Image 1 (cartoon, one colour):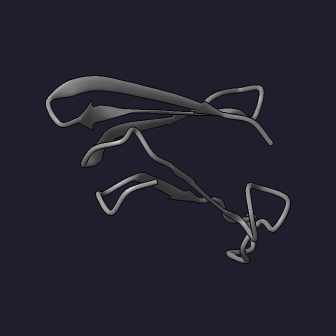
Image 2 (cartoon, one colour):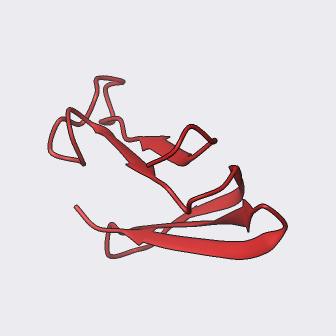
Length: 66
């Protein structure tokens, strides 16, 4: 995965506890091969999450499911 920055997300339940059904122990990391930064996150009505940003000045988009 390299040593650069990655898209990193954690999902929480309504009571503030970690949602362990999401990713690995409630967290997910996505590597684009270079330094990556998330600029915007959107939770969709179907429960999926869309993250938009850049990876070394190139547009990056990731969509996460349950």
